[in-house]
Length: 327
Image 1: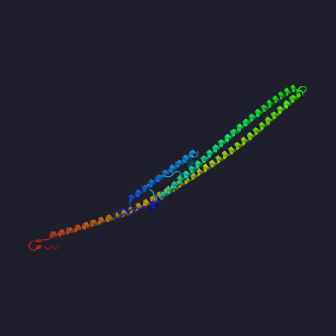
Image 2: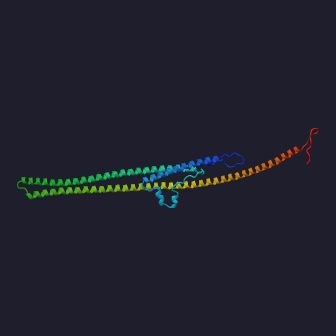
Image 3: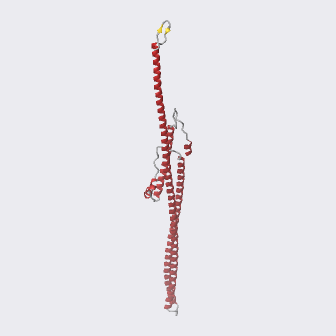
């Protein structure tokens, strides 16, 4: 978390004349930052792969193809660079939060995609229902045509039966109308039945065609509307996801560059301080060595002088040791 980085404290190094922070603790802390950054990069690459799979499943060009068509500036943000060996961790918590928010947005996008697919399935079911209605209307049209044909045939058969009945009646009636009147009556009845059958057939065919055209038109309009809405929604989701992905990649690149630069600056500063401290300690050691040599020389001269004085002293058994002779 960023608060952990801000509140992190290092102990002072032990030893005389040493300043700064403990190198071992600083190195361990930087190793933890490297591990966390590698984990974030792995999560980012996993999300990128899932997005590529989603784009391929929808028949859209992949990220590599889109980058090849884009400008040179877009190609630089296509992937997150590898983690540097050293880096600061001031923003790792923010990166984790942004990745969590991205995962939530991707989940919401998948949920919306599922809703669109559900609507598409409903539209396909509606289209199948309309197609069934169209087939039913065609069957009704065919049945109406068959009924009209049967009606015409029945009318012809009725006219024939009527003519036969009229001829029989005319033959049975003695002194009735002639054969011409009977035939004319039968012909008239036949024409009426045929005309009525043809009228019914034409009406049924016209109604069936009108219903068929109406159902087909409604089905086509509904299908086109659903396909247009689904495609628009799909394009909107894909564009939103791609924009969010590009934004996250750009932010990650910028933060990675900033963190690497800060780490390099800190490294240079620490090395400079260590070098200055080393030079100072080296100078102090040289001064101490010079002081030691000088002290040893003076001490040796003093001891040698005392020994010479002892050698020059005469020993008198009666009076004791003599005073040293003045040279």
